[in-house]
Image 1 (cartoon, helix red, strand yellow):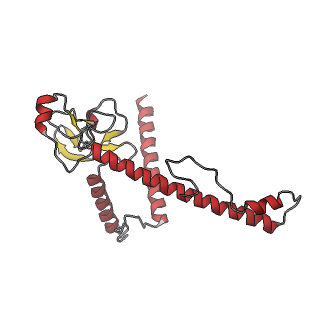
Image 2: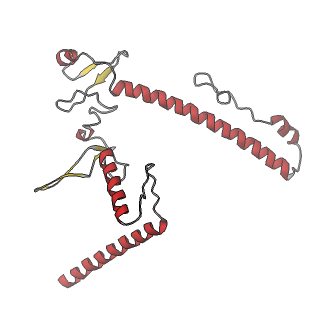
Image 3: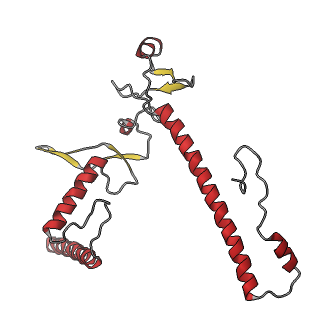
Length: 228
């Protein structure tokens, strides 16, 4: 913290370690290999300390902001007066606990959960917001109906691949582990959830999938030619 200064105080210029030695060698025309390596190593070590201090400072700030976010928009241990929201505030806006700020309730019918930041819906009903671009529905099949498959459709971040909620993701891992055991690969996915499948098994499976796709593409091309 001394190298970067506190967040409230103004930033002070960082003093380079060994500045006196560098000033003494500044007028030299040539430096030995040992002197150059020592100077670079000294500066790299100081830069590493600065980065490490800056990283932990940002991490503490992130924890503080996450705590404030969870307290404001998450489930607090205190229960607000629901009569105030029903009688005085028809839009579902009540005073926050201890902060005096307004907290918006979810606009979904029958839901009294606090809305997420920058939106009017909670996490469970965020897909009802037509303007949101971060979430998508879980694509795992929950039920097979006569009219077609019924998907889980729980909100999942679009960056998650495959698009599955935590429960269906764990279910898929269990099915994968069961299939690997049936194939004679043993416990390929241990408790730490890091695959230990050998590389040649993965490569052979990829080659098999590629050959299968090529065969299907050739069949579709042959059918088009026969139709023409």
